[in-house]
Amino acid sequence: GRRDIAGGRKMNDRQTADNNASSRYFTSVCYSADGSCILAGGNSKYVCIYEISQQILLKKFQVTFNRSLDGVLDELNSKKLTDFGPVDDHADSEDETTYNAIRLPGAKRGDDGSRSSKVEVLTRQVAFSSTGREWAAVSGEGLHVYSLDEDMIFDPISLTENITPAAVESKLVNGDYALALQMALHLNEFALVRQVLEDTPFASIAHVVRSTSPVHLERLMQFLAKIMDSSPHLEFYLEWGLQILTTHGIHMDKNRTSLMRAFRAMHKIVQTRHDELKTICNQNRYNLDFIACQARLVKSLQDQKVDKEEEEAPNKRLKIST
Image 1: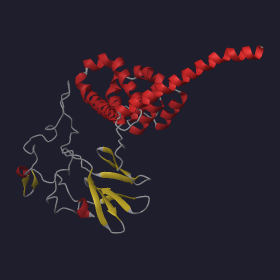
Image 2: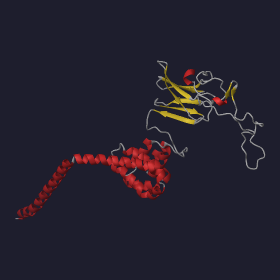
Image 3: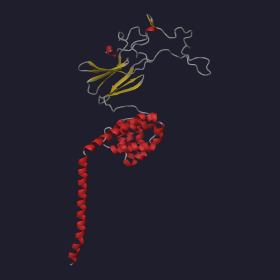
Image 4: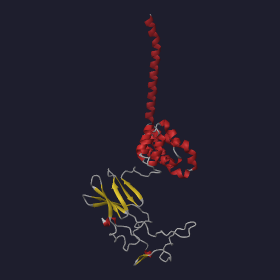
């Protein structure tokens, strides 16, 4: 396992990354739910996945590419290396406590607690999901979530403890569609946003769009473009787009540079669906004309039948009276 996670040369390492596997070791391991795979991470920039029955390495992931962390680069600058280790950039400084000090306004002394060492890259904890299709790792850079599902994107914005999928569904049940959409956009989950959009009544679309903040316009338009690519409810989502342009058109015109990407995505998918419908209608033009003629013929026959019944009704009344 040490050779699998070997990689990255620290600032004080005397050996290269290829020959220094002793300082790399696992500190956290986790089995998948079915017991077929094991996930391992530790004092390295890599997280490894092993197949247990064959005892082979399936794949390894690099959790960060932040070059400011110690141990990310495989090779250090050769100009700063000597036989006794790396040369400090501030080795010639007379005062070791002030060369990296932060000067504060009104302060006569520098920061005595300043440090010249870098933060080391490592993985503190790894875990599989219950389905085995996702796994997560905690490192110095934060939480990393990896998934086999393309629609699983955990990228929340302004997230709080009160914004949860259960809270979104509760707002939908209570009929508060505007707040439900806002919370779903904060969570930034495709399936949840699609559920909120499709559960919103057609008559309430204009009200929900008016309640949407301009900050969320770009994400909402991106979601609409993605949903319209596969949804059969074309008129429903076109109404969403129309209300967005009607309500927020002035804001979009003033901020066209920041919203151009989302606008182009919506324009592309609308144009694509229009071309598809146009092709279908042109190919079935004569069939549609035949169906329309048949509908008019059936309607005319029904009208003639009704008129005939109305004309015969007075004659029947005269016969009955006589």
